[in-house]
Length: 387
Image (tube, rainbow, N blue to C red):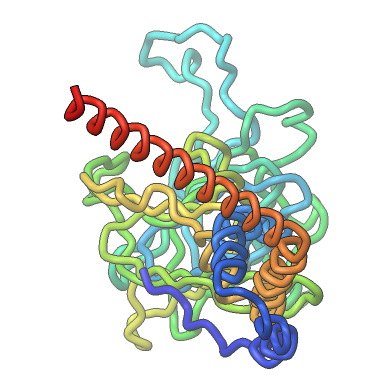
């Protein structure tokens, strides 16, 4: 993980002007005592400045992955155009978890919720709220899209996915507008699985939700090798204290097999942050492989897991990184330290002379006591000799 280079500060001249004339005609002991007090209070200053800058960071993710899995939230719908796809499975309702399991081979006993044969589809695919969306594409093969609605209230009135095929023109040729009514072939579904073929034009789209980027290399739910993240990088950005301008805090590379998620808090068990992804999938003609992703999310911590390695389970910019790379701190931090040092000098102007006198009296008293002890010892020795 690379830390961002800190820009040059602009508070040196102000600090020098503030210190000019403060060190003249002051005892070296007072200066050292004020310096010790400033160093002792420095952690408190850094903590206060860190609290003032503490806010969600913006994580920008550029990666090539074979899988993307996000769960859409409220008001996070997406719409894609699929030029050539085949529907493998679809259902208008979710399975009832309380329904009994029927054993038998007759068609009367088995609910027919899935498409009996693969059906071609060409048109717009709209994803609704609270749907688990999974994209899989290995190498330059087809794109597998799986969408399933979550069991929430009013689930049946809120479809997880809507299929809007291209409308047919009066002459029988396909048009350029997607259907907008059931009479034109629009379908509202709660579960669908389809394979999309990528042609000469790339498939571009957006997806927003909570989840992770990358897959587990040791766990597979399909009859194929598990899809993985191929590589990429993450850049953590911060906002300036007195403006909305951004600056770079840290950069973290993504390696083969990593699994990435952004968290709202430093605790790994908490819910992941809302991630907005722009993806592009290119066909064989463009030598495209996997899924190209450009995502961003606002959160507190970055979690990067790898098989057998949890050393990067919780990554976040350190307080010192924020203080060093925050452009406003280039002026505020030197001024704060210099101001505290000058305040300690001024405070010691009235205390240091009295402290020196007390130390002098104590030293004189100890020296007087030692001289009296020596005189008594000498007198005792003379008395012994006279005896």
